Length: 243
Image (cartoon, rainbow, N blue to C red; front, side, top):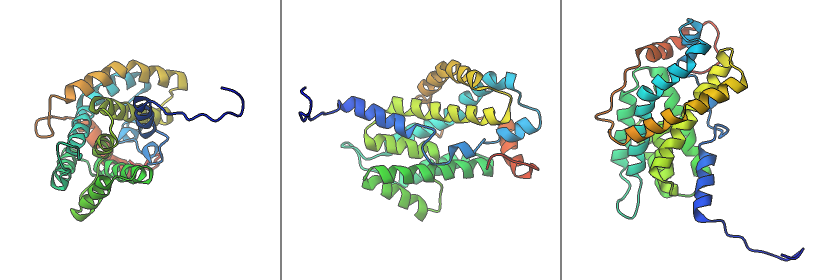
């Protein structure tokens, strides 16, 4: 092309979709993810979680809590309006209520709900899809929570992301957030944190794939230590995180 010559460039649709998925799964998205530890701060304070424990701990987290989040993300993805089906506000509220029931710690429920509300609001500021407004209004009317996993799933389907890639992106963002929290709580440098997250990618893939075999009615989650940590968090004498 000669200097000064105008050129019209059309980005390949798949590339544009991929970049938008990266954008929404970025921890820098201003929804407040970096303000939450989901009980990890309590575990570190009680000396129940050390730097050397982190790789195994996060694998277990993915197998239990991550599986539930992946299933919720998928179910919300599947409730979005498409050519084959119309968005069901009733089902949307049911999914969020069911996920709330699987989070026994009030602090974890509140944190997930705050992030989900903020994420949906951020998406509404970027894209103009009536279904997202309808989902937000349905949750407000039902006095229920909009969880981060469900909001991510719904937005992903509405924009046109692939379901499997959306779940992978959500789980990776969730794990990266926990690693970031541990960097501020434990003696873990940037290189070690990067290594930990890199080595967890296969576990993220496995969790994502297995989540396709469950529903929120059949998935199980047993994380009593994390639930205790979340419940204990408000009583800590000093805190870096909200949850």
